[in-house]
Length: 288
Image (tube, rainbow, N blue to C red):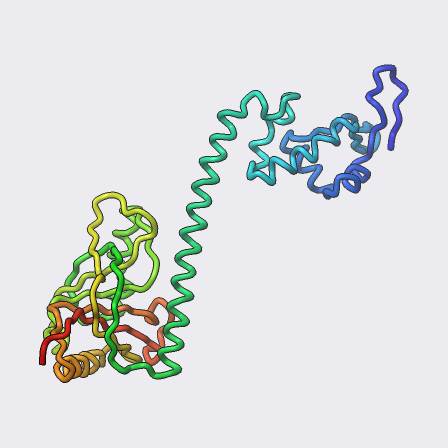
């Protein structure tokens, strides 16, 4: 601590090391504050360059910490050095702007959280299906879900269909974020069984509200025949044959559409033996 003898003496002055210790910040941080013009030392010794701070200047450090905690960047806090009122005079614009920024960040984090949660759910679903070899056929009811989609030619190349660069580029152009598995929708259950489908709808669940002109399709609100295909998707038509035979045996009428939920696919691994796809065919019970 350094004492001055001047009549206008603002009180004792503290070295940069003392300030760092008292305020629980590093010397590097204090020098960075100085570099930004955010916290300037009150006295710099000409002989050795030592920096000294008054208590009043030192008391600015908790204020800086608090505004930083609220989300303000250090560059945004330069105003705190230029006025005794800190952000008081400009608080309406500054705080409203910061609130808008934080709302956007909150939305981004919420979207990321939802996408990661969906991905984790897919991994767990795939592991359960694989470890238990769940390939039996069931009847499931699915609530309605809305998906964004793009219709394309299906060239029997599942890697291109699932990774799908044109689809990714289209979503980016529409500023549309998605989550969950890629769903391939085919018109014609019999066609897919015989592996003849030429058109496919690439579908995924949008994150938040859909904006722009991107088309949407609602699926669900009905019963589906459901079965997992485990392994190489080039053999998927065999599972469709089993599902159609099961439907006939149990008196279910299949609709003219099928959906493939790609749970473990090229997005996760290049090992085709680890792939898990849930096959879904809308169906209803008919009288025997």
